[in-house]
Figure 1 (spheres, rainbow, N blue to C red):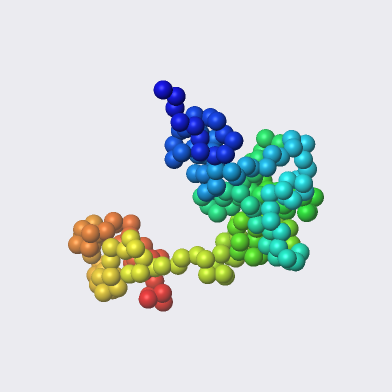
Figure 2 (figure 1 turned 90 degrees about the vertical axis):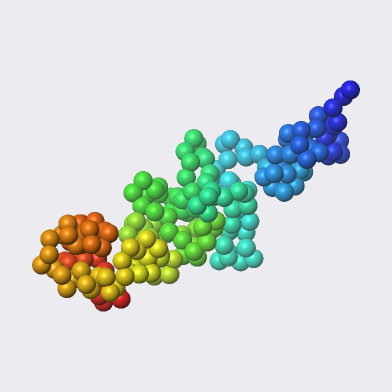
Length: 197
C-alpha cells in the first residue's frame, strides 16, 4: 500500500502532516499558506538590494518600510549579510550613513516601529539615548512602591521601619520579612522614597 500524496496540486511527495508533504507543511506552519515560497536572495546582493527585497514600502518616502518576513521574538527583523547577523534597521542605517557604528552605538527608531527599516526614521545614538527615548515615549515601566509586582512591603510598613531606625538591621529585617540590605536602603531613603508615594 502506498502512502497518500501531498494535497497541493502538482506535488506527488508523500503526505507528512495536515495533508501536506514536509515542504508544504512547513510553509503552511510558518506563513499560513502552503504555496508561500520565500524569495531567494542573490549572494552578492548589496545592502540596498536586500532592503528593497526584504521590505514593503509605504505610500510616501516618509512612511515606515516594514520587514515582510518573520520577526525575532524581540520584534526586530534580524538579517545575516556576509556572515554577520544584525537588525535589519541597523543594516539600513549603515547603508544610509555609510558608516558602521553598531559596535559602539544603537540604531534608534524615531517611529517606534521595530520592524521599520526606513533610514529616514533611524539615527545613531548611545544606549543612554535609547533609554531616554524609551522613557520619554512612555514605553518604560516605572512601577515603584506598592505598585511594583514584587513588592513585599506597604507604605505603612516602610514608615514603621523608618520610625524604628534605632533598632538593629537584623531585627527589623526579620520583623518585616525582608533582607537587611533592603532595610538599610529604606533607612537611607534610597528605596521606597516618600516623594514617589
